[in-house]
Image 1 (cartoon, one colour):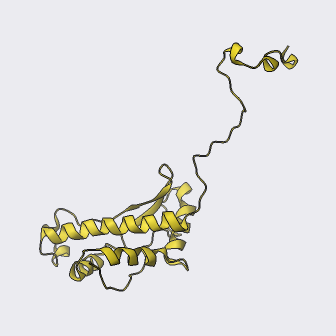
Image 2 (cartoon, helix red, strand yellow):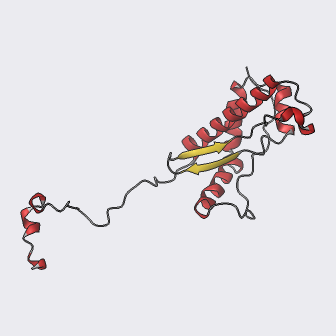
Image 3 (cartoon, helix red, strand yellow):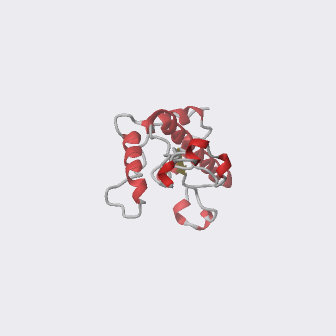
Length: 167
């Protein structure tokens, strides 16, 4: 099944005025924002791939769009996994008690929207990781001290043990 809709604007994950961003994350978020809505347009690429495969109905999509679910996505670099990660918005469990969710008529609609927003996030994060992000691994270890020994002199090569510099 596919969803035939116009690609919405990419979510804003980086703003110059935000104070709640971690210092080490600022430059990477700025790069991700450029990839999402710049000339590269990774958002359009990921959204199109998701829309071609989604089972979400047009009505449910418009509900998600009207509720701001698309704009609420967050994408960020996860240094441990060395990939772009995401946080997908969800419709809260108490949706029936809130007037904001009056257009939603069932739990199946809520589940479909939540599942498909997660799938959209996964698709876009995958596109960013695979085709756009080219950051060097943060796990690269720089050898500062050269060869290290565990204190067993007999494990050290003979020419180092008898080095005259330390006599």
